[in-house]
Image (cartoon, rainbow, N blue to C red):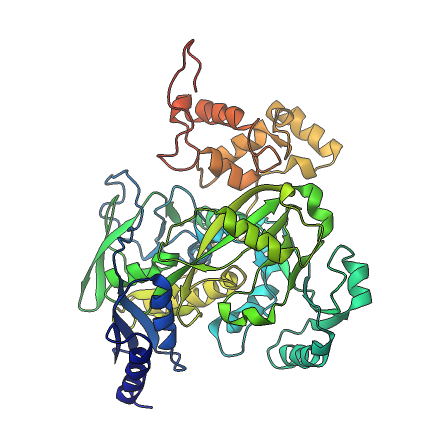
Length: 576
């Protein structure tokens, strides 16, 4: 079908649903939808109606949401000239799992590499706000980039996590079905996934075997689809480990650094303006998550759109961990069109249960608010998996925002108009699973591109092994005694819930990417992640940061520069 015929067909369809409000134009290898509507759900609907089977054509959303002032990207308050005039060979925008893994793989080469992120720490958005599942790929259709990368990504997780000293557990995944009549259909589905899609561990587990393995799951399950390769990892822990290993191998990371604009001439990015100065990179990688579309627009290479999708997870106390030993979900046949795997219950690598997420379309790219309605909806659904699930075991919850394209697939390709640009966009689930392999592919793209103009040589000093912070609670008594004898700080327990010592906290403050905030330490070694949620240890951690960084206790922040914990002294001189 020619572009004009396709365009007429789409306009006819849009006119039927949104008369006089929305139109479409197929140009520059994209489907540009424009007009104005009064609610976001209609905008999503209109854009989805325009999705093409031609994988090169992406939908660009130019529909105005009427009577709504959409908030722009939050940027750091601080400004400086710290990066002024820098000329990195590769500038990576975005400190999530994509940006961090790409930075590490590129550090295998003698290149000047700079990763920037506008947040005060790595993995502050989608990469730090997901369930950490390493997917087997059983629910993806052949032909998508997601499916192309997911099996390979899953297979190399053991190697990557071993190199980076990150805990990884292959829990296995069960998708439960109550409808026995679906068994022949699911058997055929499992055969297809195993023999055609390459998900070789896919098989059907009968009711009795399921009961033996997971006795607390709903006893109405007639059978389950099982994949032993499914696993879990701490998503922000892996992101930080990737970035730390990159820094150990010569890359640079600049946090609190927002990209504000670009100068593009002759289809090349000449300079990139940040709040810390103007940079002159040879090549730019766009791994900016929900803001990838905005970065693409700055680079004059916008050919896709991101429509943010919120999801809320609850974290349960470890005492509820007996309910699910693995990763479990229920298949709701009627929910197939919601563009979500449907969430489930996941036993994390740290032995908590994680329940969720749901999927809610939103126009706000940084709306991390958690609503009680979402928690109730998630629980009502996931109780169908394990009836013993209780809201009383929730110790905290969080909301993440996925960076979905309207095609619901990744965009990993060179810039279409702007030549020294590579997009790593539309990365939503299973983006954590695919990141190690996507990073290897982008490494090849970068080296090929840079090699056109100069010789790029291997970094002979590259060391893939990262040594993490010692974890005292996992050591034997003899090992702990030896650690304490060498450094008495390891004998001072600061977080009783997670058994974290003062020595481990100081190790974090001396790590390759030190983030001296309460949350920065929490993300790296878990103080404050137990039942009390920092009620006892936060003041002690603040004091340790204050002493180590030689700053006042009022200057210690929870996460970012404007996340105050204390504001001043109360009567009698006690800080409040």
